[in-house]
Image 1 (spheres, rainbow, N blue to C red):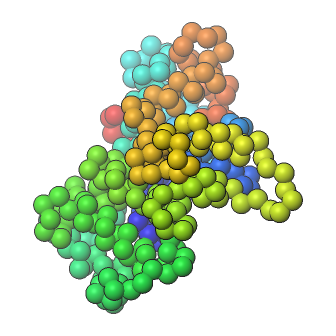
Image 2 (image 1 turned 120 degrees about the horizontal axis):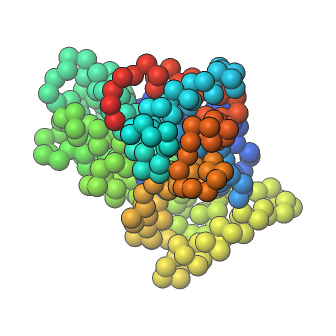
Length: 324
């Protein structure tokens, strides 16, 4: 998926948060099944609350600075009542996990509906590649693209973006008719949600990091994707930790490089449940009496963990009456 489309259809994999500025040179998370948040959970080994805000709120987390803490706390209380499905005055880990999953699925559903309508205004059963290509790339000639040599900065070249889109489209096109149904279009937009699209995401990740184009990721490329130090600057501790992670855990065959399968294990961890992990983390942060569940008071007391120190606009979550 090219950079333009990342800005248009994803928060890419979710929302582009601006509530809490990221420190410079922080490590980038490459795990793909962590929607709805694009934020890294830990920045330079320090907990990053923006990750929790987005996982909990989804797209509404984009407007933190529009409300006072008092108003955000009031609105959070309304959302807590929605999360507490059995109305026993406690939010359990399972209820919190269900809410996080609901937020993620709602974003994906709404995003697909919005993009489908935008690219297929006539609401035809299928969207042909030629129509999508014309809408996104104008009069670019596909045959010229196929014969074009890679640019030095391939990851940011317009032609490289086109090629990535074309490959992703083909992978999403299950019946191979070069036109996508709405379900196939959803896989095109949110490849991380479709099992048959995972290899495409791995390839995109490798191409993004593999600067010398040798089909594998060296330690310098791995670190360079996350950190660009200046000459004479002391290496941060988290960079040293990442180098250890590379050597001890990511590079499983110890050949000094990450191949396709090693990258896949890295960015698509087996049996990792993002929603459950985030639910357990939030309970750990807010559960003052250590009973493994949260009262409304405990959540409101730690409202900054859930909605940000300057709050957020919960308008969509409050306005919706859909069940989850």
